[in-house]
Image 1: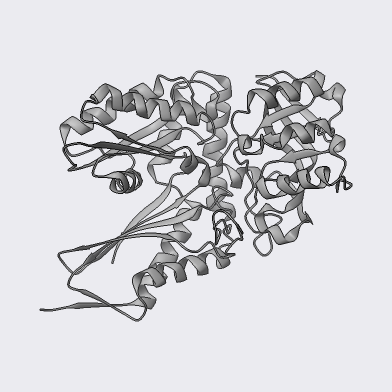
Image 2: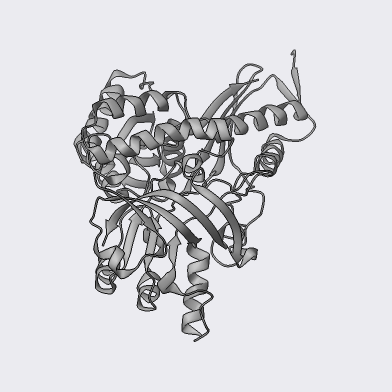
Length: 167
Length: 283
């Protein structure tokens, strides 16, 4: 198994060197977004509003963290099922989304779009949140706090373990 | 008739302790199953993931961070003895009080919505729990408690077979369910199968089947053999750990069966992820 350490945000050049099945240890910023946040991002685009962050520099993590306990850096984090985001993903890819982390298979259409745009889809292991949380050095609410766990959180990660699924 | 009395505050405290335990510790046999899979699996990728899963068990217990960020919806099966009286609140209220307290004090995720289709507003405290209750002889209170994640639950299925269906047809349905689930249900899985009953009880049996000890088999030899056949067929799919291939798609299949109508043969399949969080207590 090929293991690569990568610094986020990923460049198209970084992505071109990765192969399906590679393990990657990511260091940098992840932005969480799951169903409700995707719906809002898509609404921003369809209403021609400016997006709250540059998708080309973003690694979106399909994740709804559990609350941060007192005295800890972050609650439990882990991937949710990616295919639920398939409805909105082609639109985000069209607007430059560089990288995604989730769990499970993607639709044919999303697979094609990821490859066409030179983006990448990583899978993280589901159900190992306490282990993944050890790779987080900071966690803050970034946007849409009213969505609770479905808000966008900004996570700073060090050697966060993922596997290349679609590239 | 002599009646045994339990205070609602005592039951709530025991429920809180049970939720606390499963938030950080899965079924005790999960560790054994993960270790066995790690010893026997040949794919380096699957081995790597299994090692992470084993490390997660230690990290959750040590760091007091939940095993999975989806701390689930709470499912409770209660068997109440008819000679037992509960003083104070009623049992569904006690369950939700314990859940509310656990969600807040243990920093569990609020994943329940008030309205499923229109507002989809979060209740904020992970209530309500899914509560099933039966009245039995005796004076004890038996509670089976589980945190059920949404990913595996979403991939569960139910089919109203007719009496023409064979054992092979039912095995195929279970395998088809697992194939459709792929990596989404977070394999290695535990699979609950409800056979017979009617539309709703088959699904309830499939859920309750998950809540027995992981390595236990059906008491009826025919169904115990069917569990083995299903497990073998599921593990032959090659989906493997987290959909990465290999021989460990599921750790166990549990069947519960019930009498059914002459026209029917309902079969429900409830999938559970490897983060198999459940406990049984008796008060």
